[in-house]
Image 1 (cartoon, rainbow, N blue to C red):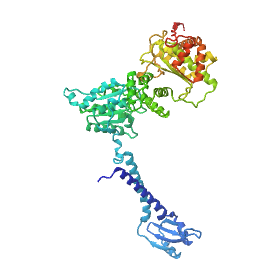
Image 2 (cartoon, one colour):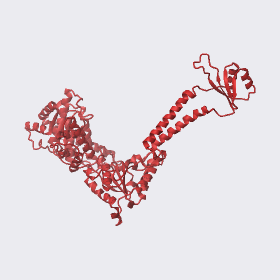
Image 3 (cartoon, helix red, strand yellow):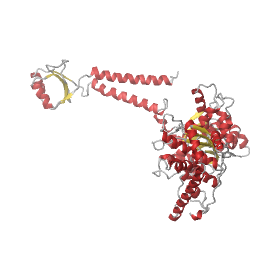
Image 4 (spheres, one colour):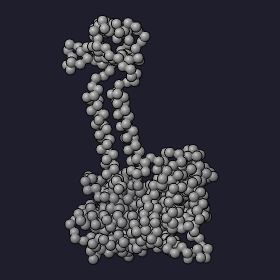
Length: 627
C-alpha cells in the first residue's frame, strides 16, 4: 500500500526533528564536559603535582580526568587527552602518584566520541536529502532538475472555450483550422496537408493571447502544456536544453496536443545580444530550434507562443517551418470592447440603465484586461456605496479610475493652487471645444487623482480612430498647451503643472517631423529607424545614424516652430474668451467637477453659439519656410 505523499513528508520532518533532539540530548547529558588537549610535558607535570585522578592508557594516547578543584560546583574534574610518547617511566610515575590506571587495546576513539561525530553527520545527511527532494519534487528528487516544468492539463481540465474570448474575432478565425486539425487530423492527412508547426500570437499586453491559446485547447479537447519562457533557463548549464527535450518528449507521447510557451521573448531573444557568446539562454534556444525542426507535423503537436516584443525574437524562430503563422491579437474596436464587457459582466448584477455600449464608447484604446478591471472596479464601488446593482455611474467612475487614477481627496490644495488648477483645466477644455477633430470633453475635475495629477480634463473619443491627419495632430498640441496659456492670460505667469502637457506636445511635434514627414521645410522624409511594431512605440524616436548635424538642427527648429505656432493659436482662442474662461473656472471651483454638458451650458449662457460646443476655429495658413 503506497504511503500518502503528505504523510510521507510529515514523517520525514518528524524524523529530522527527532534526530535533532537526539543530538541536543547527547550534547547536554552524554558529553557534558569538554575534553582538553594537553601537551605531554604538561601531563607529566600534572601527574607529579598529584592533580591527575585517573587515566586510560592506549598505544596512541592517554585519556583521563584531573582531580576536581576545591571550588568545583559539580564535583567533576576536567577531562583531558594527550598523545603518548615512548616513556618507560610512565607507569612507575603514575603508580607513585596514586593515579588509577587502566589500559585499552582499542586504538580508536571511544564509542561515545564516534557517536558525537556520527549523529551530526547523519542529521546533516537526512536534512540535505529532504531539502533536495523538496527542491526537485517530493517524489522525484534533485535529479529531476532537467525535467520540464510545464503544467499539464488534461482534455477535461480546460474549461475555457471561444465563448469566453471576445473582441478578437479575426484571431479566432485564424485558429479555427488548428482546432479542426486537432479534432480530426485524418481529414488533413488524407490529402497530405500539414498544419503549421508553430503559431505566434503577437499583440499588446492584456489583449488575451494566453486566454486565446487556452481556448484553442479547450475547443479541441486536447491536452495542453503551459510553460513560461523564463522557466526553461536556470543557472545550471544544460538544464534549459534538457527541459526543452523533455517537454517535446512528453508532448509527443500525448499527441495530439498543444504546447503554449508564454512570454517567448524571455527565451527566444536574438542570439549574440548577451554578454557571452555561448550563454545558457542561447543553448536553450538552440535546442528549441532543433526540436521544432526535428518533429513531424503530422504527429499532432502544435506549438503556440505569445509575446508582446516580436522585434527582439531571433530570426530563426520566425522563419517558415518554425513559427509559420503569426496571429495579431490587437486592441479591440468598439464592437469588440462591447463583447468583452458583456463577457465579464455575465456574473455581475447590472442596473437597467447601465448601458455597456456607452462604456464601450468611453474606453477606446483599452484592452481586455483593462475592461475586466473596469467591470470589477464598478462592482466594488457599488458594494462600497451600498447598492443592490451596478449602475452606470459606477461604471463611469471605474473608467475614470483606470484612465486617470484614484481620487486623492486627502491631498488638500490651498486657494491659490485651486484657482490656478481650475483655470488650467478649463483652458484645456475650451481649446478642445473650439478646434475641429478633437475628442469630446466628458468631464473636468480639480480633485487630485493618481500620483501627480492635481486636476484633469477627461476627453473621450466618440469613435475608433486609426489615422490622424496633420491638422488634427496640430490641434491636439494646441489643446495640450491650452492649460499653460490659460495661466498666462489669467495670472500673468506659468507654473510647474504644465510639465506633462509640454512633454506630450513636444513628443507629438517631434513625431510629426521625424516620423511622419509633416514638415514642408524638410519634405516627405522619415528620420526614424524603429523596427518595433506600432503598438510598442513611444514618443521617444531613435535617430538614424546617417542623419547629419545640419538636418538635426533643422528638425529641432521645425519642432519648435510647430509648438510655438500652436501656442499662439491656443492664446488667440482663450484671449477671445477670457470672460468665459474666468466664469467657467469660478463654477468649477465651487463644484470641483464639471461635465461636458454643464460646460456647454455655460458657453451657451455667454452668448457663444453651440453647434456642437464652440464654433470651430480653422488652422491659420502659415508658411513654414519663413521660420
